[in-house]
Amino acid sequence: MKSNKVIEKIIAGINKNVKNKKWNCLYNGCSENAINSHILQKNGILNQIAPNGFIYEIKPKDVFKWENLGFNELTYFKHIGTSQAHSFPTFCNYHDTEIFKVIETHPIDFTNYKNNLLFAFRTLASFMRREEIILEKHKRLYNSNTIQAIPYNQGSQRITKEFIDLHEMLIHIRNKEHELFINDIENSEENFTFIEFNYPLKEVYSSTILSSPNLNSIYVNVFPYNSHTKILIFYLTKSEDKWTTEFVDGWKNLNETELEFKLTTYLLTKCENWGISETLYESIDSETENKIIESTQSVLKKQKIMLDNSFSLDFNIF
Image (cartoon, rainbow, N blue to C red; front, side):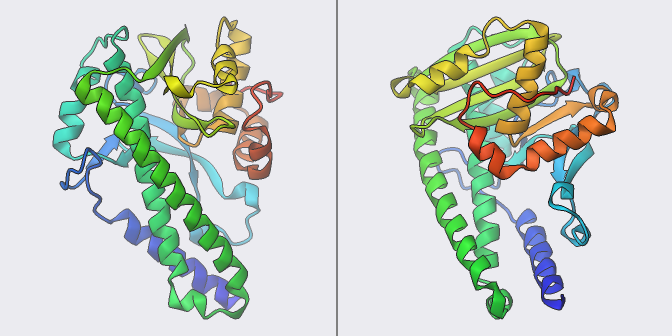
């Protein structure tokens, strides 16, 4: 239909304009422009599984290629350089350099509370900026005079408005979390509980924020370091609940097979920001790749199992 083409063109234009928008630094009211900051740094972390400087991440296909595609075909494994991987416009050059200097310099002291906190803080900043970008796109879509004029599009507009309300609420929550992190960073307080796990190297990485049934945030970073897979988990100590404890306990004392299924289920059902090495991608057969894509896009299924700490997929990507 002609109207569908019009909508696709508008979406593509909005995506392009928002992508090119200048965003302010997220540190404590700084008004400088943000640079493209890595959630997990390239040197010393991502390059441990990317000797050629490239990795794979799940990405959406261009909107102009959606025609005749099924829902499970709208995303794919994209081959990208580590300079573009796992990054958002979050901090200005000064704050990105100064705040995170201690975890950009190797070896990193993982016995230090603040060093570990900075990994979670970067994850929070990426989610804050992500929410702002999503909100900006949907507000522009909602306010498009052309789309508003399409007669049968009222239902979509209502859903878009609900989506806007949701992300405005999420931004409010993230801003409060941001204040707690700044307090610990600047005042050397320790308001968060930190747990660290080390396992044999699996060539994957991710950064995400989970929410318990009580809407308490759990910050999780998975990344390669010194030929191991490191899992860092943070949550606000006073908000500890049974679900959070169960989630943490689920990572304890895993054998290699259990770890592979645990990581696979975690990445595919609980994470949005994750990637794998070229070597791992090349070892995945087409059937498993299809299962991965299907699992990452099964929104309703993911919503049902998101809070189920005992759920496990019946395949793994390793």
